[in-house]
Length: 462
Image (cartoon, rainbow, N blue to C red; front, side, top):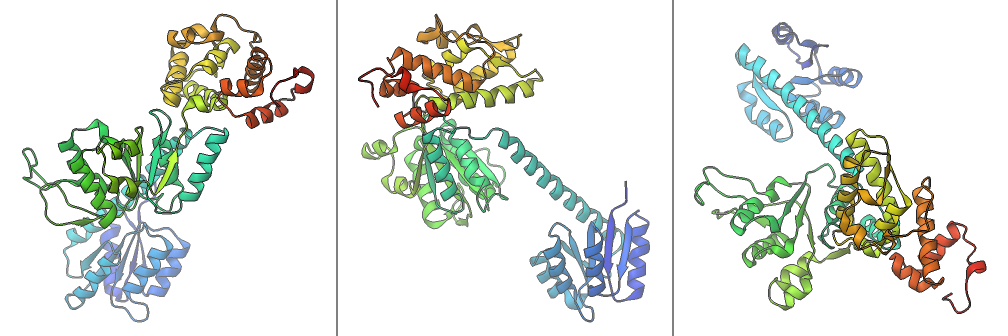
């Protein structure tokens, strides 16, 4: 493995040679330059882990070198060397992004330790960036899946609002994927490089929730032995997802209103406001408008949160997404468990299509994960599904879908035709059972090449 590379920029030859010898003994590869112009040429051509530059040099000074390097590669730490007379300029350089300043009279150990620390910080930042990228990659596997008309409208709204900083309120039953929608908005926003922080307001008691949200100062309550940053502070520059906001108490609601109005928080036990820079996305599975009318939720907070409402439909209202979701989860959990890709039998598929899914997508995901883990064969059958699904499925006893080698699209087609047969090819009734609208049903019939005119009885809905 090659040694870390240090670029030294110093117009005094004696100082250049001293640093080259000192850092060379630490097994760093040291490259020296006598001017800022020369240094930038080297920096553009080669890779360096840290830069040490004198602040006062003829021509391009150390501040100009710092600015130029930060534009080329912001991750490389720049150490400013200074004499006592230029301390004020060195401190100003640190405020502009320099890693630290170094007195020319510093001891050898101080120089060695500062360079070592700069390289360690750079390594940690790169690792952190890699971990964030890896996390985003893994999260992308848990993408929002759906092609139904209801979900297309959700996707269109996400596209419109992602690039803004507007507050968003997501409505949806438990398990519909509200946090996935919030993450998608964050990842498409200008804040994507910042943190995505989430908290479930219904999972914590009021006292703990207040401390988690806003932080606390030392001694503000029993057990507060040190100052603690709140989640709003942690989310600086990013997005804060406030799940189940309807579960908050009036006291918490007052503080949330302050965040939205003043963009500041006051930690528990504190008196000094702290400015926050976050985009707030809230979510609820309750009827907040009804809670406002009943006096259980502040009207002013509701209107501050409800700038852009996003409604996530329950799974029973978008059944035509079930084949896509089944395919998606089969691939994810077969891969995660190291098992060959399983298929689902037509009878089991019909069970999934008939069920109302009160737990929505999360329940479907859990059902399929359980079946993949426990089922030993290659085909998931009705008996591999929970009893409550089979007992509530009218089609679980008999089925006209018999081929075991159908794709999910073919299964959907066969199930759609079966429902049409059972309803006498009454389009509106069939669409209602399938959980789709009539226009979607017509599109699917056309896509699957079904000759409806030959099978359409007199008096059926057109």
